[in-house]
Image 1 (tube, rainbow, N blue to C red):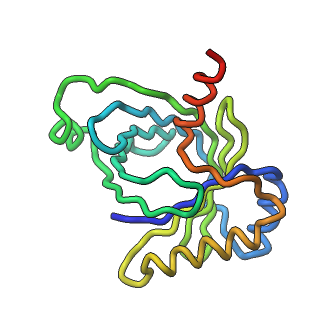
Image 2 (cartoon, rainbow, N blue to C red):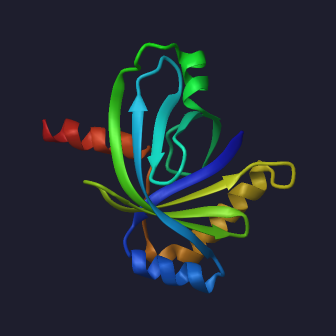
Image 3 (cartoon, helix red, strand yellow):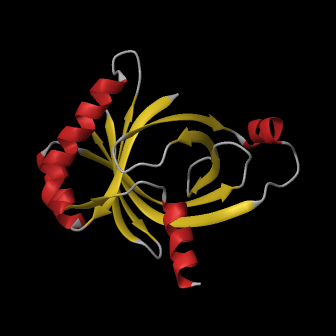
Length: 172
């Protein structure tokens, strides 16, 4: 599967919530998530744990850049991960704890994330499909960025695990 995603700092979460409501976004739910990232030879693999939901393993490829980017991903069960990556425990790289508010806006997921030790971020994921090509996903994300502009901070080129690693490296 593919999606186009965009992540940025969120300067004013409350303003973002108000703007999303005015745009007609539906608040789906708020969830505590633990993402455990593993070291794999190619791409990225994370285990996502959310209370009340099945554990997912998400394997993906994505370039690091601050603009909206295309991501190729596959969601695996634990059994499928063992088949794909072997039965030995994978080496853990990073664990990320966050509270995620999930909104749905015209078929696009908008997340307000409060990431432990990092702060607030906005993430927008537009799924690529037969009725929504990559160009349309980019336009949707651009429109959401424009409408939420006053609440947003700087675009983020990497994932949360990378940001935490950068903080650790800078502190050393």
